[in-house]
Amino acid sequence: MSKSIAVSDIPSTVYGRGSGRGQVPSTHSEPASAPLPTSPRKQGEELTSCPRRLSILGATGSIGSTTLALVRENPDRFSLEAITAQENVEALIVLAQEFRPAFVAIGNPAHAGRLREALAGSGIATGAGPAAIAEAAARPADWTMAAIIGIAGLRPTLTAIRRGGVVALANKESLVAAGDLVMRECAGHGATLLPVDSEHNAVFQLVEHAASPPSKITLTASGGPFRTSMPEQLATVTPEQAVRHPNWSMGAKISVDSATLMNKGLELIEAHHLFRLAPEQLDVLVHPQSIIHCLVHYADGAVLAQLSHPDMTVPIAHTIAWPARITTQARPLDLAAIGMLTFEQPDEARFPCLRLARAAMKAAGDAPLILNTANEVAVERFLQGRIRFTDIPGLIDAALSSATGNTPQTLEEIEEIDDTVRQTLSQE
Ligand code: NAD
Ligand code: MG
Image (cartoon, rainbow, N blue to C red; front, top):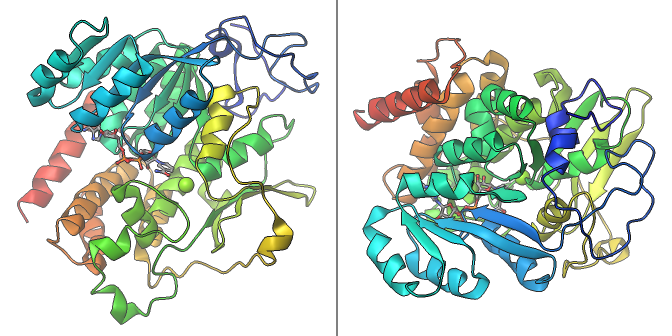
């Protein structure tokens, strides 16, 4: 395997490696500018395949839709190998008819007949159930978007990683619940992991060509819809209010995570694994305008920032074309029109989920996995109207008391702990 970047002490899974790039076919549509000396790309190496073959896991979701919008705008650059969804079979059929992937998988087997019948005679293969989602992840794509929500995305994400290809990772819960395993599998199979989460993608853009690792990373947080709410108001907020994010348009679960600030806690753990920094080298800064996505601090005192409007088009476009750049419809950034960017410390007293996530990151072992599972359960109950917004941290805190300090080593061990935590919580 050829080592392709002069950064030896940062994970090659994030910073690109020869075998991952080997997944990208070798014709391209436009000339590349000269790569920087530290670029993982060799001089003259081709940039984009024509078309690059993509699989999108979680195609009907918020990230999946934004990814497909880029495919729609670039029909000569991208074609689809496989797409998946869990429940929304009608939306999946519409996408299949428009994009004509080779394979379409629906997670819920109850929709198998409807999917098969709708695509009969189209030449598109279909499948249903978890095995079909796994098959979609295993198919020979140049690039896979891992955008299933929650720990349900872990198994298919690992399947894509084990192919040794390029995996754009939106599914942060995989890294939180199984960071050691995911990074080990990437290294072992020569996979290239490209962070999609806006803050981590921003960091990646700033460190990709750096010859020294950062001394610290600051992830910015919008503060969510309740940034200025009084503590007593938080007890009565509704799911509708919680999913109405001030800046970002996202799926329901991550929107609630943003409202509790658990999203930023999950992102600290995600950054800890992706960029191999100690918990003390990671912090959070509330920045309500969501224009600056991260700050990367270097030992010499330099601090680099990455800016864009809060629009997932930007990080997704970066990963879909990586290492090239494509034109997008993202709104140009006009800082004079924005006028002022503001910053404040996160309030862990009103938003204890951030404190819980930091504690789980420091404790390591099975704590981040338990944190993630308990959070998934709590958010689902809140969305169903079964618990209050302010009950979410208490439920997670209680679940964390079962942490053993041992790190689960295999996917099966991780899934077993996830099941046990869900069962225990369902009996309470
Ligand atoms: P979403 O709820 O909008 O979409 C989730 C997708 O996963 C859907 O296609 C759904 O059919 C599929 N899915 C759900 N349950 C499944 C299961 N059990 N098995 C297989 N497929 C299943 O979610 P989203 O907002 O697009 O988020 C996707 C991932 O990206 C999450 O991990 C989230 O944290 C991360 N992320 C999202 C954003 C964003 O702006 N939406 C930003 C950063 C990171
Ligand atoms: Mg984010």
